[in-house]
Length: 299
Image (tube, rainbow, N blue to C red; front, side, top):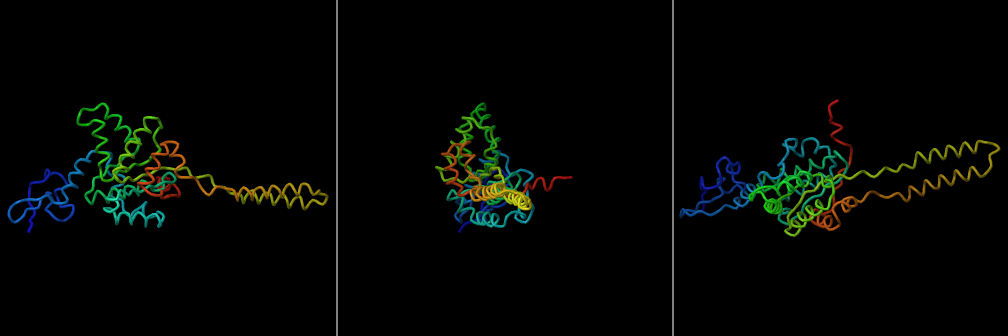
């Protein structure tokens, strides 16, 4: 028979001592047997991981504290996307264990970061170690690690980035592209891909310009009608207008269905990196719509 043991875990000021992350021990990370021997609780590994990840990235930014399926902007997003994210969170431990992440792409201000923070918050509440980075901030931290002492070396940072349970890379593609940047991102993503460690990715993609043939067709038809109303009109102008209408129809038939979400990133990051991200995260989830920040901006 086991009993929880007091006072043998991390510092009491640490929030992980308030309650066992798994509801087994008293939050100390140890369970006391009847013969007075102690054994580590399964939550201890999670506590250690959280302690090691503390100070990495931004954590959950203040703007996203309290993010929830029941609050804006999440509640207003596409129900299909929300069902997908909700299912991921419901199976979070299994997804983390299998190394499956998520990839959100779309227009600026559509809620991609909010969705990523929703997942990160759920992971944190379940005692998993989480590192949240905008990619420009990540690269700045990597650069600064070159000049730090032995406790904050590049290799130390890289090890922690590789070992955290869940890594969030926000605004991938927002960084200025150089050979050095490409190498750093490939090394990190490749390491997590090899270790089957999940990544949550967001990146913006310009919405392809909408092709609207109907207004032009309407104009051509009106011009054709004007020609037809002219009593002495020759056949040639009518034929030219018909050809113009036919050309608009051909353009509509040949219009591309949409932009490849990987196209720009392949140019920025290289095909190897994007391929590994796609395997870790699966198919990118489109999060389209108006800029929600503009909609809520004070007048």
